[in-house]
Image (cartoon, rainbow, N blue to C red; front, side, top):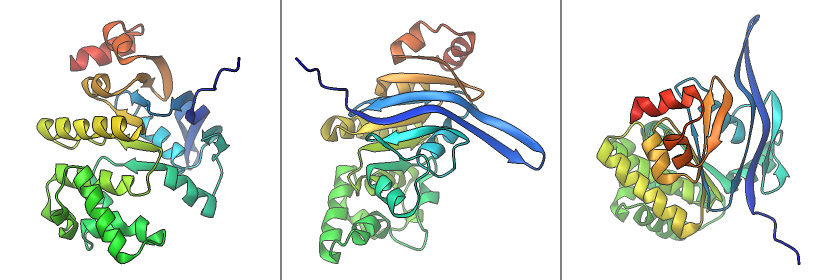
Length: 256
């Protein structure tokens, strides 16, 4: 009897990133590999400067990889450009740390959320309806479509950013410190929204984070990064309750 293969959405193999400035070079990420399955959440944790955001930017093709490869739904996307890359962004969307900066201040939130829908050929009327549905799915009333980024709170703006990311119905949401700029109460609300989306839509998540409590509440597995290298990986409970490496122990002690 044949066993079905695991539904791997994303695969990163031996990722390396070297930044060069003049005669100086700095290795930000060294030999990082992982997989992400459908409906799964992978947390990447580490101190500031450990290489977490560099990994997210390589995966989303915002920067080139020095070595290694990235595959999305079984297709190598490491070096793709143009039309092929645009197709990738229909499967993979990013939610950034500073939601206010990710919106055009001269355009309404609704305009920002609806942009990808209009680009896909959706009529103005259907775009308006879909935008309002997305806002409601993310805990905002339809009236928020008419507001500008500076007219809403940080938490509301992050919800709108999540709504915009969901507009293309992606397979993966990459959240790069998506709650770290929010206060604790709003963090909890946004986390509850993400958990709800994960369960309802079977979305996969890559959570770039330094908050181990957040990782424990949301993630299925965790990579611990130190100076660009994976020093430990496992379930959140394993990592937090039984850390093997000294670096991980220090990271756990600093937040618990």
